[in-house]
Image: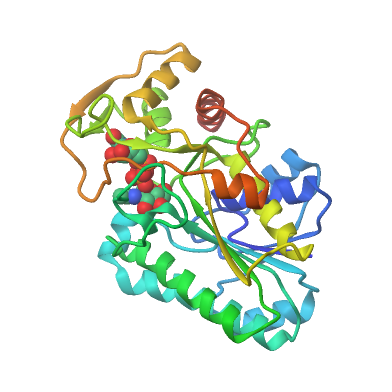
Amino acid sequence: MILVTGGLGYIGSHTVVSLLEKGYDVLVVDDLSNSTVDVLDGIETASGIRPVFEKLDLQDRQGIEHLFKSYTIDGIIHFAAYKAVGESVEKPIAYYQNNLGSLLNLLSEIAQSNKSIPFIFSSSCTVYGEADALPISEDAPIKPATSPYGNTKQIGEEIILDATRANASFKAIALRYFNPIGAHPSIAIGELPIGRPQNLVPFITQTAAGLYPKLTVFGNDYPTVDGTNVRDYIHVVDLAEAHIVALERILDGKANDAYEVFNLGTGKGSSVLEVVKSFERVSGLKLNYELGPRRAGDVVAAYADTTKAREVLGWKTSRSLDEAVASAWNWEQKVRN
Ligand code: UD1
């Protein structure tokens, strides 16, 4: 079966649904630090199948050993990690301990298993920092991380690369996500930020739902189309599907190198105001927003060069920004009712 760590989280749960729909047996592991068991019900509603679930903190080495003894694991998609940029600056040790400790425990278990277990790693376009050229290809240089969170992704990738070099049977793919948004069309699962959302789309939908009086647009004097930051917003279901394609690439022996990296995005940049307009279009509502100062640490613009994902991985997105924003809004309305 396929082990999905962090399988009750936002991207994890959508990937579990895609795996189940494709007929895979799925073992979900999650410590519930940023999710709830109710997500299992949502996964079951969306896919018609209830995956096996084990509550486990991956920093528990013995717990992982027990897990590998109890189940036959044929592949791993590793999402489980802390992911809040701001919080990582305040609690760097907790971020390094959790994100890297979990990764190291999994990798040592794989090494001990004497089995070839494909490994898919959840990485981020944050590794490119302020890229020198757009769109951003996988060859773009890695820039010094601007947060401990981003650093755990960079270090994580380096650790995995070294692990593939040391073990001829170990193959891994790191997927560098641009900005995932939206929800499964069934709206049985979606994004559930705890507290005030830091990310743009959940903040927009929660504002429209009346939880906040207005959205503040962080900066309108950037050298972009309308002065606001440009990002590559990708529908979470498109993103989820890429994980299965990546997993099958290794399972089917099609990976060229023991360690490969792919950018996952649409290739199209959208400004903050374009996302606001998309929301207004699909919801028929007017969003209350103000133009405010820049947010520290934001890059001006980031969107993916999708060539490698398309030509080598054989994957591309099929869902539009409007479709993604509409699904996020449908989900928000469901959560609030
Ligand atoms: C952020 C992280 C990134 C991480 C990702 C995970 C930073 C610098 N980057 O991406 O490393 O992988 O989250 O979720 O934190 N915006 C507003 N008003 C708001 C919220 C956001 O104008 O209330 C703007 C931001 O300034 C940005 C855009 O919306 O231009 C997208 O922001 P966000 O959703 O936080 O994503 P990133 O900053 O791209």
